[in-house]
Length: 316
Image (tube, rainbow, N blue to C red; front, side, top):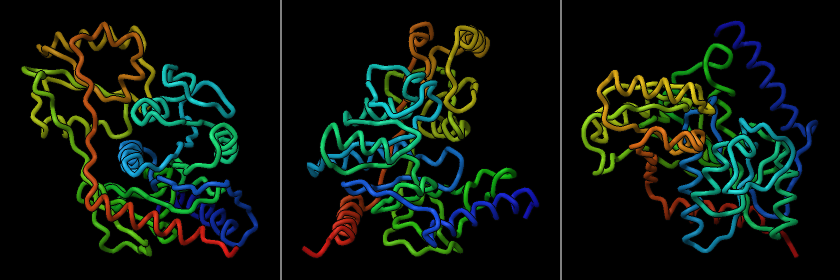
């Protein structure tokens, strides 16, 4: 292991041991908390999975809200997300979640305080904790961790992208293996293993050559999935994750569009939020949703809810 990664791993290990020994305390909300997290820095599909899980809960009539840090926002403190607001106020992913699920989304650096606000406004209801695996200050009733094929081969920060070693999966309740990731060789003690596929289906209206761009953690995956989904990609341009688009960016994209002889632009739902009013200048622009297919979804959700109920069963 690289010496820098070894130092980072020692720091993370010491922090985790302090939580496990009780030296660092966790705080518990009134309602159950389901955490959706990962081991790496971005790009594992947490947001699409959270939305898919939220839809499954809605189908069962289960009320819930979402607690998020609100990464990338210019504001601070605990705030209820206005779906009509801007990514500068709330962050792009919380906005996307609020618009897709139409449930309360609360952002805050302190997720316990965010949960308290949620319970004050709406009463105790189930909480989905976005990107919560490392946020151990908030007690959770079920820990879901996304694992991508890249994670299995990756190294700890700062050399690689892993925020924790693969052995940390031992404290997960469920592991979600994305796009043919394998659990072979991993130390797992999960209650549940899910498999999901993330793919893209190009809309039938998208004909001819398109120019694809995005500002996400793993842009190559988006471009590859676009081609696999049937799009004719003339050229691509990637930006940093959560990139806030500006007029110079739009001019650059228009120039690249002309240079590659493209007939349309294609981007992600998250990028459409970050484009804001600039989207009109890129017409025709196709915003492509990422499709998440969760294997054995109904039985998996049933098992998860049973586990949460058992953990919250208290003697009268």
